[in-house]
Image (tube, rainbow, N blue to C red):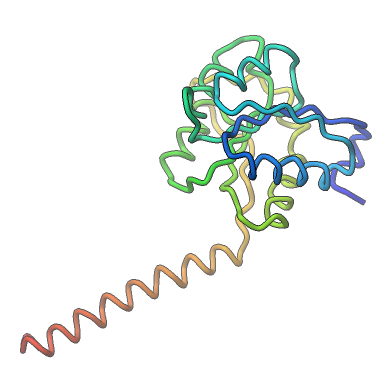
Amino acid sequence: MNVLERTQKMEWHVVLADDDDDYALLVGRALERVTGNRVEMRRGRTGIEGLALLREQVPDLVILDLKMPEMAGHEALDVIKGDETLRSIPVAVLSSSDRDDDVAKSYGLGGNHYITKPRNPLELEAKLASLLRNLGDLRGLRRGSDGVATTAASAVSPASMFNQNVVRWGLVLGALVVLYVYGKISGAF
């Protein structure tokens, strides 16, 4: 049973604003796998194109990349959540950036969900499934770009957190070893 069978939705309407052709294809395929249904995904390569698509037909979900030409994702998000007719559309940021300030700014502007772009298609599917499980709760919210508290966040896998901690501790340990060896060589110890 896929995660969205309980909604009984036959077709999903999604607007994706992302300038990466290959990643847009991955997102479209992952959405269809996760929903088990047809996904009409309209795509803009810039924030401006994405906004034009929103005004043509209101989708079930908007997925924004942060780094795009002409109008970046944060600018587009600010416009969406500042527009009375668009602000109730759930917006997920899907970005290669995992910087805390990008995540905080996305939620501060009214974004509903933040996903760091995984390279593994199965991980992308899992993150999109998490997003879509919360979509019903996000749809009715009429948030603006005024720093309202977040409503959903992409789950961080324990394996990913473990790998990040191993790398961090490895760097710290490596720095300590270098300092120790340097101290021994220079006669400081």
